[in-house]
Length: 292
Image 1 (spheres, helix red, strand yellow):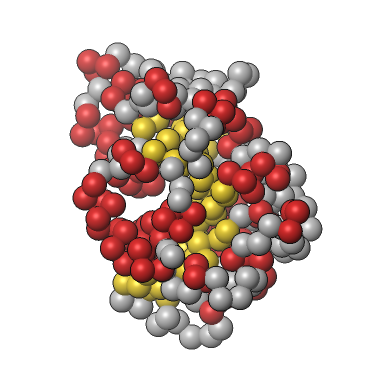
Image 2: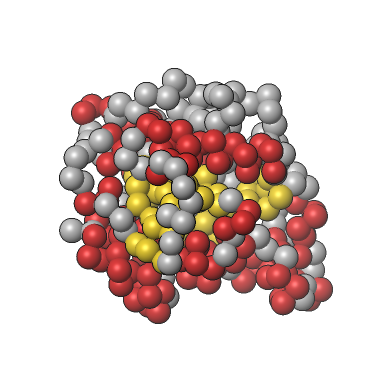
């Protein structure tokens, strides 16, 4: 877990961005709507802090992240937050100001902003720097801190988030999405069937391969592949992992135990050009109009 810092959102070297308050930036307008749900980037401190409060409720209160980690006013906050854009889902059927209508969030860290931080968040677990160095012509985006309130964990909330992500990808001409996805608990063996299936059937191609860092590497092939029931393995995966696989994501080499967040993490790699065309057509439809 990275060390937290005071939550001013000034960006380094004068780099502007939507959450830095760039007035009129297209990505602070709605990026998608489904029923009463609307998705856009955070516009101000109140919205970012509300997203951090939701993250705290889910990661700490619900999933058991260690409360000894540094946190501020029951908010999950670290040194990367000021450098990230925060994608938010609002439910406009709720009353109150916008920051009290947030029901889901995703944290987006572009490569140029990661450089200002000295690296991506995921580099503490996976050799992402080497992967990016092998593809200097590609623009990387790290997805992280994905969470949705329990009562909103539905297909339409996920679709709203992906509408926003597609608009963001198009606006910034992102080539590759990466990030960690988590299984609950700190024992890889508890997920032996799912992890073994991923290791055998969902690995990255050699040119996109990325390995867990030395000293934190845990093997994912935990049982004979002949003993794996594919349907049971897929059913045992967290919804976020299944969602990534559905659009064509691949998995890196090895998993990492994150004791602070009480999870077993795998690494997701999604070159945009390799994502299934039906998903690009479906999710990008509305988002394209906002991406100019």
